[in-house]
Image 1 (cartoon, rainbow, N blue to C red):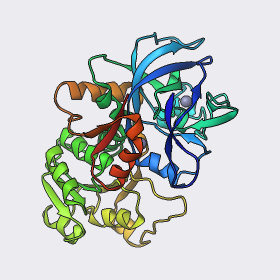
Image 2: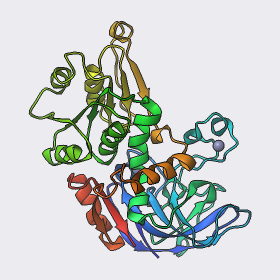
Image 3: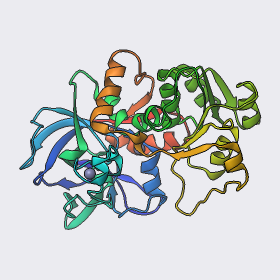
Image 4: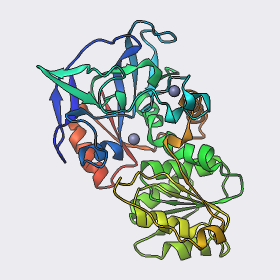
Amino acid sequence: MKALITRDLDQYEVEEVSIAGPKAGELRIKMGATGVCHSDLSVINGTLPLLKPMVLGHEGAGTVTEVGDGVSGFAVGDHVVLSFAPACGHCHFCNHQTPQFCEIGIPHGRMLDGTARVTKGAEELSVMQFLGCMAEEAIVPAISAVKIDKEIPFEKAALVGCGVMTGVGAVINTARVHPGSSVAVFGCGGVGLSIVQGARLAGANTIIAVDVADNKLEMARNFGATHTVNGSKEEAVGKCKELTGGHGPDYSFEAVGVPDLMITANNATRRGGTTVIVGVGKLTDSVPFNALMLSMDGKTIKGSFYGDANFRSDMPMLLDLYRNGKLNLDDMVSKTYSIDEAPQAFKDMEAGRNARGVIVY
Ligand SMILES: [Zn+2]
Ligand SMILES: [Zn+2]
């Protein structure tokens, strides 16, 4: 099969590789679509230090073609969306309604049992997040899959596997934005645009999108932003305060992973408000806070991982919202690519051309 593989720093290409069948607890998936996400790029450029060579891809949907021993609840022909974090259902975190922190395994690159399914000759290849779904086929843990309605196109369903769940979830699960509130979103890539949509769904009254690219701000308006601020031309904190009666937004979201932008987002947040950090920064970066002002301003700073989602219920919920016309996934897919065109999809993402580029098979 064809798969997009990264071997060295800043290097990636489509290669022909072999894939073994599913072992116990696993499913074989014929991929339908895979979203191209900045986290794939983070593996390529070493921000996420995972075991290479690695098959990329962690935002996917497809069809079950083989069911491993001991798997219940899935049959050949089922359509599924994949979670990039498996949830065992019975560890400490799964039992405390935080399956995104499930302790079943660290996604170093091998499957949950420590072995590999993808090979090239004698060489074993890693897979990203137990999935490696930027490939024509993938072997995945059954506890990473969610059955979905067959009517939903794969290129739309795939998006809830990472970016859309992360963004909408940060609003409805992490921040719990309430109707009538004000929201600012710093960074309008696929996740930021999903935060804008989440804020609209939550009934926010003022939704301020901040980015340095006018095309992203244009997209943000389409997804529900009531105001846009180009941070390269305007002073974003002052502008956010001006648009919210001088106080600052009730909620600010940072969706890039840059320390300075995290500080900017928190400076914009009104006293007593909440700043949610969604962007994934570097392990070596730190963000200072003012020892006096943190308590004086009474702000909450929260991290949000995978939209604090319970993916088994939240992903189907998002797809129901899509089907009922409330969540716009159609415009999230800016462009589709074949697996052979995957390298171009990464170049387009780096150039900021797409809300989301999606590989279809
Ligand atoms: Zn992702
Ligand atoms: Zn668990």
